[in-house]
Image (tube, rainbow, N blue to C red; front, side, top):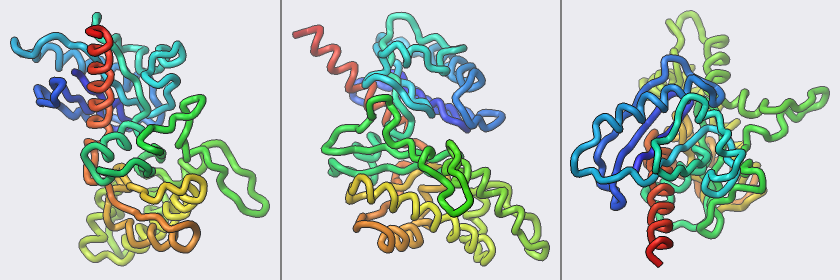
Amino acid sequence: MLAVDAGATHIRLRVSTLDRRLLYSCAYRLPIRQFVLNEEISRAVAGQVAAAIASTGPDWGPLRTVGIAVPTRVVGPDGDAEASRQNMVFTAFRPPKGSAVVLENNVNCAAVAEQQYGAAQGETTFAYIQIGLKIGMGLMLGGQLLRGRNGGAGEIGHLSFPLAPGLEPQPGAAEQYLGAEALMARVHADWPADEGEPPTDTAELLHLVNQGSSVARRHVERHSADIGAIVASCVSVVDPGLVVLGGGLGASPLLLPKVRQMVDRLSYAAEIRSSSLGADATVLGIERLAIDHTVAATLGEEA
């Protein structure tokens, strides 16, 4: 079983058995962050998969399934529709011959992992909202992933934004405003000279909050309030009862107080939790889906 998280900043990969015994893993950081799925990510996937296959041990057995989580919508429940086969992840990468391919949206995969191993264990209905370089939502309703007719369910980056007199909503503007790059641009533009050099990324910004920086805390609280407004919108539409926050920024517990406050004020009651899986959520989720696909196919063959 080979599971790949083809992310915007990292390629994470796990090779495991059907009972999840880990055989090989790696995390490769892309030289440049990629805002959209493109050939650069595809080449990185090809390189990391080739390295994993080259490390194959004599007792590993045949590779039955390759699961790939991608930062874009996927058509078809198992990534087997023609539109999915034309996904950009395959521009430079070709799956190993003889192996099945399971393709799924990365945020959906993270939702699966949180239900199986993380903050949503035992829950059948919840929302997983990712806040990082981009934003997205995975919806689990009655134990089933909600994908939508076109694979676009949960694409909250396309919510109408901004909404104010004299302003016209633009496609993808919500994601651009709430993404890490826009946040850091606002931080840099507003960073006082007497505070020294501004943080270079969100990880450093959160570190400064923990170190007692009032300026960093103000920015994190403002951003948390914006995230809370988006979460409240999702709660109003879906009423999931539980929302798990994940992603490079969203998983930080520092966001929870303000997000909870905004949701309580703007929408229905919902429990808000931080991801317990962090950066591994997506690759663990696509591994789970690949295992399920392989087991179902094997049982079907033997029936």
